[in-house]
Length: 223
Image (tube, rainbow, N blue to C red; front, side, top):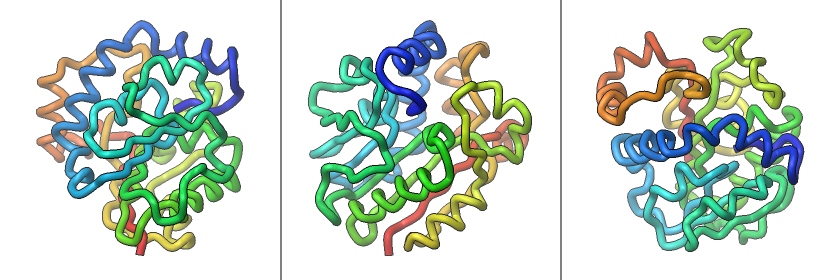
């Protein structure tokens, strides 16, 4: 997920932030995929996890071809052996053909890019690589609801909302299917780790999202 910097500084930052809760995150993401994100995997043969980090999404989905993009040197050690990793910046040409993906997924990644131009270039690459009808699924902290806590992470650069992402993706050529300003709570970092049962119940009870949700969920489709 993290992209600011590369090599050892990025490795160390990721280990400091997430290392102590890795097992819990794997359990939580198993529930997130099973209960919610698997709905976007129907008919998907080729999926790419943008800013895949330690594989919390891509390791838990089934597809014929799974890809990830990340600069963290530790990433390869955490991914399933079948996942193909591209160790590169996200806003330059991806080593994939045009119209070669069914789904591009990204969680808590775009805010780490250096500026808005980089965000747009990254989303343009997603549009190039997706097949007609393919989905782009984006999740991340919503500056409208996170407020000043957004800047508690040193590598947050680009403040985003569901509205700003709808605007830029539609300008690129996507059609919006879902734009939720409030979806998941902001962060698990430094917080008590939720049992899997509570995560399951939360996802199945949308009224709670309006109270606790501080991350957006934007789902678009390539025309």
